[in-house]
Image (tube, rainbow, N blue to C red; front, side, top):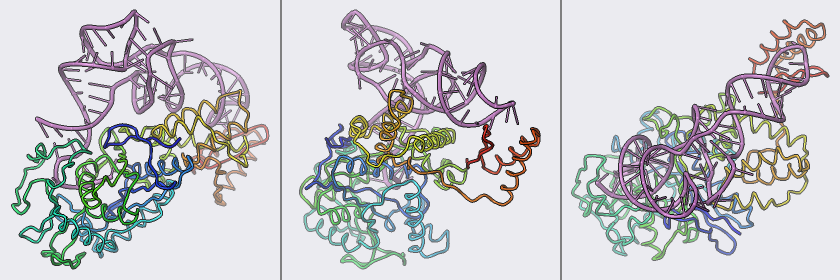
Length: 454
RNA sequence: GGUGGAAUGGCCGAGAGGCGAGGCAAGGGACUGCAAAUCCCUCUACACGGGUUCAAAUCCCGUUUCCACCUCCA
């Protein structure tokens, strides 16, 4: 069996395809003009879960994730997001890109996401895009407007709208915003592949149509086809990219290859915080560093995500992160006492849950029942947890990290030991409170006090 | 207006037509000098109105409310 996952295009779960035992995967990556918030990270985690499950089924994965560092226009200011942030921080736009790109990788590592094989940058793939734009013009799928902008001709692609369910006619009004007819496009749904530089001085490149910069959608078509050898088995991204980004990407790629370039379109639903989509304007943005700063294991966030279906909107709260933090800690402690096995046996139940559209909530529920089942041996329990952890990625076999105690804390611990042996309970309780405020957990037993970090 | 989803107890959330997942919080108990941790127990819900069926949270029709997307977005 292999992973079967919900395909937005066909609107039903479909078995993952592969070529000679390898699944090619493309994941829409970040625009590196700011930190990724935990909602962004939920989508990046989805790619990781897919890749890990595919490997558990015995197939290889070749995975690419792009870094958008040019051409992503901001609607508010009609300016490139990179350049906008560059002005704000008063540093070179490429330095902005490298800064947030590094932080993106840092976040992925903290969430125990296995890196892709390659993270191609849009700014380093301009040649690829220029080639593709020329090819699209040559095929009659694109045209050069009077202002020097190269547009994709939406009507040239008959399947336009099949991913999102939108129809070209229905899109006409441009309902959300006051629609401004710019008069250069031939058709309202056409989009730009290459834009002339105009007044712009930074992040521009020469092209057959004069100096300028690429449109946002073309980078994914160019990089996915190039780096995944012309065909993508699985394409992953957030639900909001379904339209227009993926719709446009599909039109571009298919016009080039003349076939269906992507087998499966997988979309992750949004994360809500306090019942609303996490966004800057709503003021409810949470970063992974915020989670860590509150003393939570970043993998507690990972567990929170795993306990919800990737296709459901989920509402995150500090309470649920805290609960997940405690659960991971308990599991690690128990596994340490059960003993880790040398060889992990396949657990068909867990594998079946995962291969059934990444049903991670069922896996975690199953693990909780294994945890409580008195008919299982410790070795059997450990095996189930460690087998699942190959995909869950919660580092359940990790021994608690022992941080150095400060001399002050050591002193308080010794004082408390003495207070306890002389049965000075009020002093003992006071000292315990001080230790707990410093982030320790104290437990007393017949053999004396012991401590651990929260 | 178009498009894609959703509605389950104090909260979060699985649900396959057929004895009410699970978690968190809360309350009670065991253990403890007291706690913490751990373990045991308790708390019986499916938006509304119809329909199909021996049987509906689940299927069908309608209604209401909510979220998201409609050329910024993970």
